[in-house]
Length: 500
Ligand SMILES: *Cc1c(COP(=O)(O)O)cnc(C)c1O
Image (cartoon, rainbow, N blue to C red; front, side):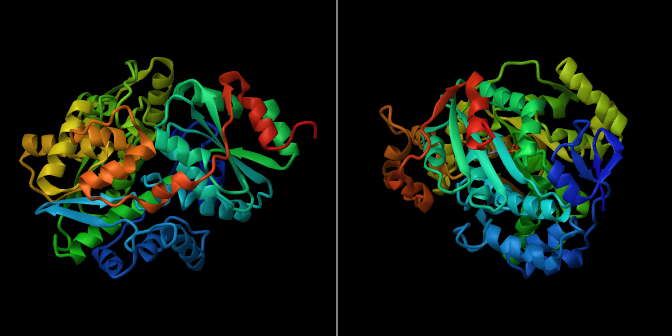
């Protein structure tokens, strides 16, 4: 199986090459040339397996150069104990008849990014070996919170890799900051940037496009790479939990074999929900994919009007991981849904970078609307939802998952669709204690982070994830903060290439 650039199908690589390269040279995203189709027998067989074994079987369909034994080991390390502290890895919680949550936050950092970032380092280092790449890979990350910590945990002490994470000093929550500044590992470094996420990200982009720095690094046997969700090695592991959730519903008797279900996904960069679309194309019985946005409703407008327009204000919300105006992985959806129309994708993407918007054809819009439904919920609605769901069911939502729940309710009201729905739950509420306690009507008196853990536990009775609880005993290792223009010297120093 080969992987094609979404902007030029004559660019064709193997899986290992695509994972090492990350982004195609023409700016396109590598996408499998055909999607493996699975039968109901295959799904039945998965039902009897653990999450690790389900993952190995599904990933093997896409990775010809990897042996089954190799993937078994990777999956056990990535998704077993101690990395994941739930025996089912990604458990399904049944709220009521017809409605479940797929909990993706039982990993090391309590957010769903772990599902991909516990696997990516293994796929990446193995891909480097398979393609004969001998350099050490240096992962450079700009994070708005969740990705940075999950990438640090994933790459920590992985041989042949180093990782340096930049985060905006004024743009992450207390807990997220503490998670990063106390990070352990021999090959990790973290640095704050004075500014917001845009400053941080544009600083990292400048470093990536610095040819002189790149060749300097190469002379020292180092290769610059990123851990963002455009890499196929990050997307592939996410397909697994859609299959796994379906199997769990069958095993528990909530659905019949072959019955269609819906998924509702809190969406930012479009990676998570795209994995659901790929699972559907492979033959998983999925009817609708409900795409939930916060006040940054660029995707809601896209699915309603067929126009993607980033020319708007970016709102800062209580669900910060969805505060995004360019959903990069949407490019892969356009490519696959148009049956690999690379010239169309390429012209839409130049429209996006030049004018900031593009419009798809009516035919394509119609095709997408058979699968996708877009909706949004603002902060007020998300807060109200957290309070109401806790009161009615005793189940505690984080602000991202609350957005999804609210949009699911809107969909149900508009459509009369009573298909079993799985809401994808992307973070532990303990990562966002301040907003969650406020939503439950508690006065938090200007406190944030660790100080609120015990308060939230006594109010809700929900256990604190043990790794978050341990943060208070950890020493800070990285307290450096630099201006946006001083990021390059940090890279040079951290990688130890100055004066060599
Ligand atoms: C990253 C993230 C999302 C958005 O996922 P995408 O794949 O970017 O659409 C939603 N919720 C949480 C908690 C996240 O960390």
